[in-house]
Length: 371
Ligand SMILES: Cc1cc2nc3c(=O)[nH]c(=O)nc-3n(C[C@H](O)[C@H](O)[C@H](O)COP(=O)(O)O)c2cc1C
Image (cartoon, rainbow, N blue to C red; front, side):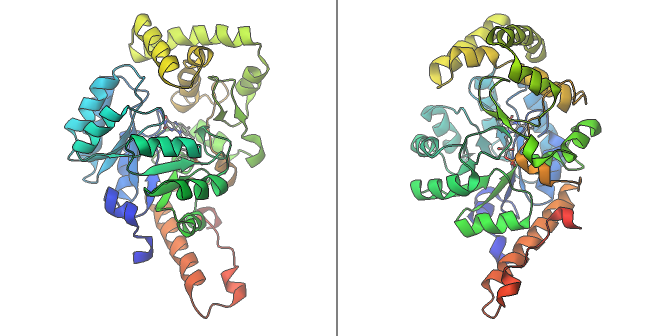
């Protein structure tokens, strides 16, 4: 592979390509992390929606499937967060990084740093990037508004330069990426790589059931709006009947549904009702979330699992980046990453060649879908 794609991110994370497979609850399983890491990317295992023992088993399974370094995603308000931090640190020989949104405090971040584990939060606004670096972040992933799941309002093309100008740590671009052109563009901005969620959700090795993948492959780029109706926070999802119903429900209706889902969520995580209430109050106290938002929080896992685990896309919600509207096939991680690398190299080569005719530099190259 040419040195043009070997960025500081590859040195920091020990991966071949400057590409991160991001964490997605119930999707970034050991199988996906093993496949993306063995194909040259850096994979993040999702731990944010799992009880401690499941996280322990998933870390062990990932270790057994790859010699590559990988990352773990968690958040400080999930049940068992302190044990998960300990578990990650126990695995510091292979867990190279942690990612988080609602992140750990400076003391916990220092524990990771002392263990040689890099802290790589994802942020959706420039002020959050500055704060994260103050708290000790080693690398920042910016997620532009077109990105999947919880997302901000500033598009990647504006947030990326804003954050690059505001912080002095390496920055990775996320939100809307799926091909080699995007990687070349992100590097041209000054990012050290790209991070992708939706694109990895739509691979052979992603554990998402076929019926749900099919729904994503048929999504229209204009039908993947942001809504606060799921858990009170802006979340980008493919429009379906469940989302339409949530969007048109009254506040009382939303709270009633949230209460039912809180009980279902309790069974799912094994957390006690008191434990859940405690994490909700903690979350409202220590973050900028309102109590209403924390009460609605259990909606998300229950409705996401319906589509992502049970394969019933019409009964659950479908968190997705807008980029799903451009993705029409399910490559293996290996095929996807080889194509991205090849296209990004070609694009950069054409742009940097002294004698390149203008028509060639402006030629649009196809992404993985073009073949
Ligand atoms: C289905 C889905 C689930 C997600 N779940 C999580 C999650 O559990 N934790 C997290 O930090 N980010 C989550 N995200 C956000 C992704 O990690 C990533 O930042 C985002 O998908 C990037 O934008 P893209 O989809 O355009 O590539 C999720 C995204 C999707 C599409």
